[in-house]
Amino acid sequence: MADTSSTPDTRTPAQIEADIKRRRDTLAETLDEIGVRVHPKTIVGDAKAKVVSNIDHTLGRAYVGVNKVVSDVKGQFVDGDGAPRVERIVPVALLAVGVVGLLALGTRRRKS
Image (cartoon, rainbow, N blue to C red; front, top):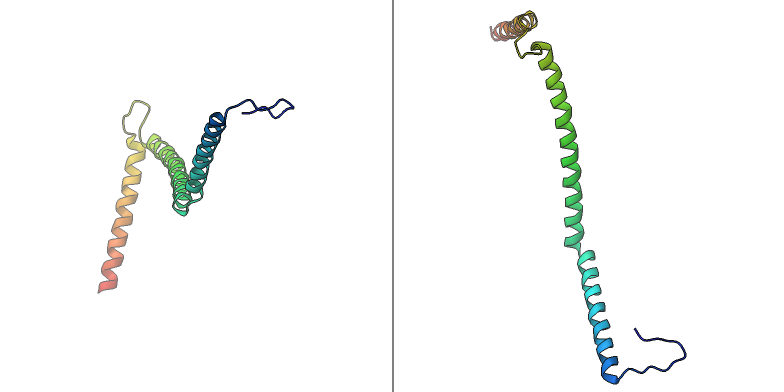
């Protein structure tokens, strides 16, 4: 860059032309970058990427939450060694069989 103080510019015309060309090329690159950034496809792509990132983050948090609930439920039916807790499994199984039986009876009575 030339010194703009009171000393005269001692560059040759070729040096000045080279400096102008270099600055013109730099300006063209900057304008191309701005053009790409404000292009509608770029804006839409950036927005999509942000939405996908937010969804991934939300799904990750949901997975962690579900995994914790499953672990808590599993802890109710399996002891620390991994052996099933029969005293808790049997009542739940009987309850499930009873609910399915009631639903089956209710469906049969409606059909008749």
